[in-house]
Length: 211
Image (tube, rainbow, N blue to C red):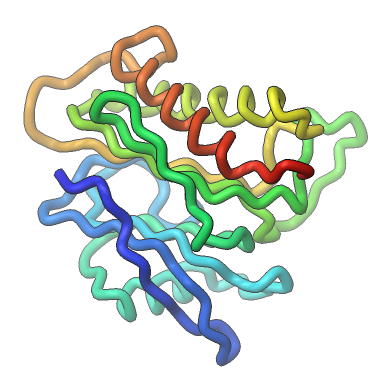
């Protein structure tokens, strides 16, 4: 199971933007909060594509399909979009767990906003992709999303960022389909602890010195 992201590209309004693409030889189990290809299921690819800060398209599925096709992706996959510079992606690992993070902090917010402000989707985003070496049960996958999110928030808090993330952050976690399933994904489980440390390190490295 290769732990790498291929550098790709796509065009938005006639301008070329970079993209990160993970393609799997066989479909992998995945859980994702992404608007396109999210949920729990088998996925053949994941992409994290940079878009302009003024991005206004609402047909996200169609746009992701265009980007995927242009980067050699076939079958079902997960598509994430971000205004963060994906060329500055940060990779961290712990054991055989790998995590990549692209960190955009333009629209950082608290999860429980005291003013109750609601904003439509905008691409100032922290996107995390993690690759685990063993299968996880559905509950463990969901728990792993919580673990990754807590690790991201810990990194932000430690660096003095005034928020828990942005309103459009996405997490995608991928694991094999074959083998005994791990039933725990929390931060004190074996794989969950490795995931937490990898995500924490990747997000920490992606936060600028003066966010």
